[in-house]
Structures are given as C-alpha cells and as structure tokens.
Length: 194
Ligand code: 5GP
Ligand code: MG
Ligand code: MG
Image (cartoon, rainbow, N blue to C red; front, side, top):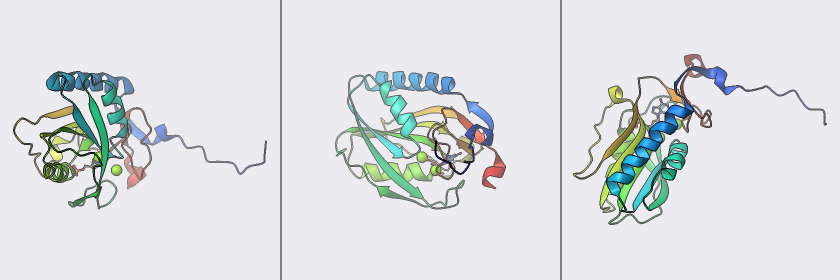
C-alpha cells in the first residue's frame, strides 16, 4: 500500500436531519405509479422525457414498472438562483433529441416547487405538436406553487407524494450536485446550506 494523505471520510447520512421516504416507500409508490400509467395508456407507446439531472433515478425505476412501449429522452432546464430557491426564470438548455410530433409525451420530474420549470417545459414541448403532454412528478410541494400547472384536455398529472416545504435531497435530488445517490429522500440539515 502506498503512503497516502489521510482522506476525510464523508458520511452523507450524517448531513440528513430526517428521512421522509425510505427506499421501500419509494419503491412501493413508483410501482403504483407504473401500474396506473400502464393502465391509462394501455398499449399506446409514450415518450418519457426526464428532466436531468434530478429525475434520473426516478425515471430509471419508473420505466421498469411500465408495461407499455416507451421511448426515453432527457432535457435540461436551467433555473438561475441560489442553490435552494428558484430565480423565477427557467430556460431550456438542452432540448429533446427524439421527434415528439404526434406522440404521447410524459414528462418525468423529481419535484415541483414553484412550478416555473415545468410550466416552461410543458409550453415548450407543446410547440412541437405532440399528441399530448402529461406530467409525472415524484414529489409535489403544493403549498409553494406560484404558477399552476396547465395541461391540455386529455392530459394527465401523476403525483408520487405531496412534500412539505423543506429542502429535500436524495433519490436523484441534489444540494450542490451532491446527495443524488442516496436511496431515500430526506431533509438536509439547514446548517449544510445556510
Ligand atoms: P420549480 O421551478 O418548480 O420551482 O423548481 C423545480 C426544480 O427545483 C426541481 O426540478 C428541482 O430541481 C429543484 N428543487 C425544488 N425543490 C427542491 C428541493 O427541495 N430539493 C432539491 N434538491 N431540489 C429542489
Ligand atoms: Mg428537477
Ligand atoms: Mg438541483
């Protein structure tokens, strides 16, 4: 063994104040959502559009629970602001690669907070003339909504869990790009970000 500088041992779990949903809670809810979506679309192919990076874990688990044909793509939406609050302005920095014209789209998002990101994205996707644009969000901070989610007729909104007004991390969700790999969702200790 080579002599090495002693490394600081990072224990991400120590930065979590409390766990809101365990890996088992999430797995159960994702399976329910998958069954519901598969039933609603029954045999119709859909394009899953994940909002990177936060939705990667949710999308990966959800797509395994879908028994309908799926295409998968990702977009990036930049919201400038500080690390725990939206600035109020969202821009699409990476667009879809798959053509969604006349296809049924399901946007897969980790969490809806003010609603600014999703409403911008849904409007943007609608300009590409898809057959429909529905939304599946794992978490919804309903109490913080600034812009209501407006979906066209025949579109659906799927919600995993309602979330209290706390900054959460894990299961894809980050603080400063960290904590995404936690298998559970928890509230970050405020002294980490304040
Ligand atoms: P909105 O535009 O709805 O205000 O914010 C949506 C985006 O902000 C989410 O996709 C997510 O990336 C981020 N966000 C909102 N609330 C939280 C939170 O509690 N934790 C984390 N990690 N990200 C959040
Ligand atoms: Mg997101
Ligand atoms: Mg983030």
